[in-house]
Image (cartoon, rainbow, N blue to C red; front, side, top):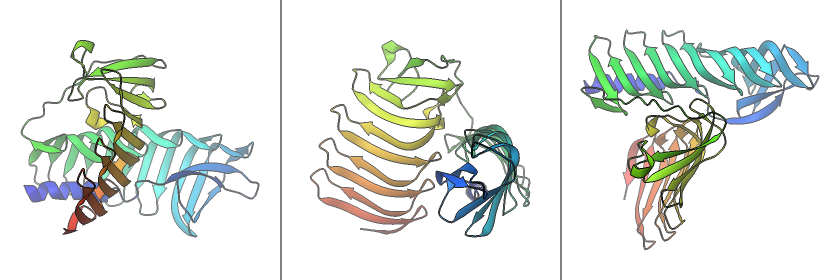
Length: 331
């Protein structure tokens, strides 16, 4: 059984080889100086565009073909508005994988589909090009994952292996029965709201609260601007950006950029960095006297590189080295 679960997890990760993780960049895409925004740009990228150009920005329906150092990378066929993907679109990659759906501010967001030449297919929700939200992922060997995905991984739901055996996951952990809560919370859209949480970061009323949050939703589950959490006594507890905020489980949130948490005395407790919903780059933890407690490096959500730990006195505690999530050395 453990091997089956590990295989399903590995296959889930392997289907994400084309998952995008880079940076926004305006790219000139024809000799007339027409530009479009590439949310997944890196050095060596060039793009051609065969659609209309208005005010030097790609507009309307067309085809954008992307190359990396002269080699074909992907094709986007769909709608642009002022140089940004906006509306229905289809993304085809050099490995044969395809994602189709609705693009918002350049990102595949909402209901969509994913399929490839190997026989994998996904139908469900996307956030920033990731499988995030409720969906069904089928494998060519007959296995499937169905439930709530968080940044391309099944978070809570049902797994059926290639032999028809059924397993359940809740919050990434194996369970015999799912006891997932569904919130009836419906916050105001477009206006700041205050939300209350208990010590376990479960939503509650004010009298039971340990923390509260100030947030504005641009659309259901879609925040606008920075989100700030506070201790119930008024001190800042954390601040962050997110592309998706769940109403029933904080583990379903889709974080982006920096997440900073604070001790009640105002000193930084942690600094985490997210790239499209996954921990990425340097992660830092501190003691309440400003002494660094830990420094770790992540790549696509897994430990990769050195992990250093310190005592509160400043003396080094340990140094470990990880390679794609596997511990290699430690002292």
